[in-house]
Length: 595
Image 1: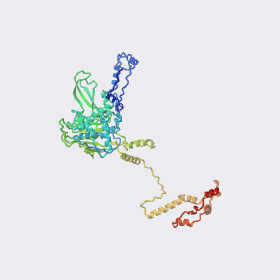
Image 2: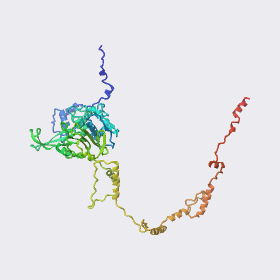
Image 3: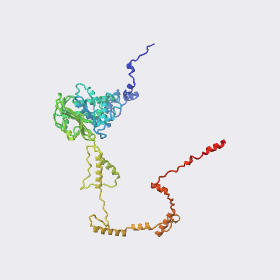
Image 4: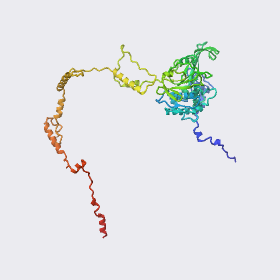
């Protein structure tokens, strides 16, 4: 008999409740192969197929070719076979107007970069809305160490404590994970890239995939990740089609030495006809001369621009770069992309008070949900103007798409048009055609929309054609500046005119003197009784006599009640004291029966 198997303690705790409940279930697509269908694929081919012969010996190769072509657009851009997070669920603007949250205080050296990055993350609408929804923490299996869950709790804590100070100490320990050679915790850009990499790492733990293109469809990459298109044209065989290559980016690294304006710095980042040597021309099959054209094929939903102000030794470049709160990307976006290219500034990181990265501090400028700008310097919060923001020497800039909207007054006009029965006059040469009101780049508040609605209604009233006033030639008009004698004469004339034309006296006489009969018992006349004038005095006398007969007789006045009502006498209930002195009848009867 075999000895009983003894389980080790590690094996006993391997399948506990926690490990079973927190285990992520990965669903794999079915790979069922129908042998009959495979035989048909080997013998027959589609009629419209031009790449495969009818007698093909391999069935996997055409399927792979068809799948590859289905996930590549006409410009050679690879489309993901699976999307881990639907980008339509991301809201690029604030859903509600909130007050500014708590400020950050950390008792740690060189923590200004961490605080600036956290403030920019908290007040970037696209990322803040995603973290507030807690879509990740609902399915996360490593909540204690997860960077996404930590940021969700941080944003919730900041928004729930306006006017207070909180200490995000949990992120100081996470910064120790930064590997050597991947940046410094003193640099805000390195800290920001570390946060993005950590968010991507934990999002892939939730919904992992081996395909690199699918990994670029997580929530964080749907916000910050974009693609640059390299269009290469061979100069020796110009008749051939250009080749396309794509490279992704999370932020644009801008060199500020070549220009003093932001748009020019971005233009230097994209090549426009740059000469190069090309080794992969499919037609020439040799090294040829070519030109390179670069553009944004898919701009990110949050465009991060890094203005490199520090060299490899940490020395700072104090050059001023001009920028504005509105950025138009149309000159750098691929012409084939029909997307909104107007972006607005939502956050900014500035280094102040030092000539190197080892001195000074990082300060964050963010735009609140109310559209106002705020400066978050350490644990202080101060509202600033937009002019002060654009005058700063920025180190990082964050732009989001400028949301377009239809004003409320336009929607109300369209709703009222079907109910209108009047037709608008056609524009003539003298009257210019109506123009649509300009669309404001910022969403107005409720008060502004109400004011616009009132103004719109006033304009509609003003545009209505004036009605002709029908004047009466016999009318007597009294002006306020007429003399008193003239007013008296007009009043006399008005009384005389009313006595002649008005029928009010006749109606009054008929109501006061004419009746249709009595109101009591047999005096009520029928419906066919003749309408005759009767003596009003006789009717009134008979009516008074009848009413007097119907009145009830008044009770005799009690003098005691009158004195009681006047407060002279206090009414006391009569007490029957002799009731207890009388004999009990039941006792008397009982005594009689005993005898």
